[in-house]
Length: 166
Image 1: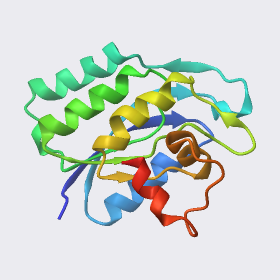
Image 2 (image 1 turned 90 degrees about the vertical axis):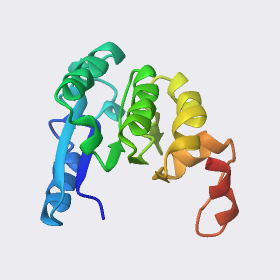
Image 3 (image 1 turned 90 degrees about the horizontal axis):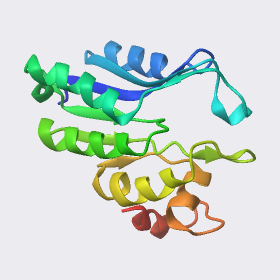
Image 4 (image 1 turned 120 degrees about the horizontal axis):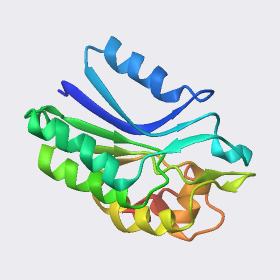
């Protein structure tokens, strides 16, 4: 059973999913650490926002601090979500290998009716890295369609398309 989870995701003032997920995991007795990839005023799907995104080098630096403390190997699960810098996906992939952890990836790309709310090159990055390596993927329908190139799909009626995400 998992004991320690590293969450690599976003921190939005009005989007509290990571905080709620952390609470649920902690109530299940898991130790949860969080590394935010962005600190935004609101969801980017609304078109404008303020705040800061971490770049690959900054995430790598934070992980180096954990590595220097000998803490990387304590993670059983790496949860990843929203990111805007495509290099972060590779950093997470490398972290999963180093920690020997299970990767649970929400490849946040966009939704209906807003479309993409990340840079377009992240679709290919998720297709090439996280879809091939993550043990668990949790795309919404829009994201699954972007990743597979199949339009339209409904998982309940076309479960064979889930295999195309791997």
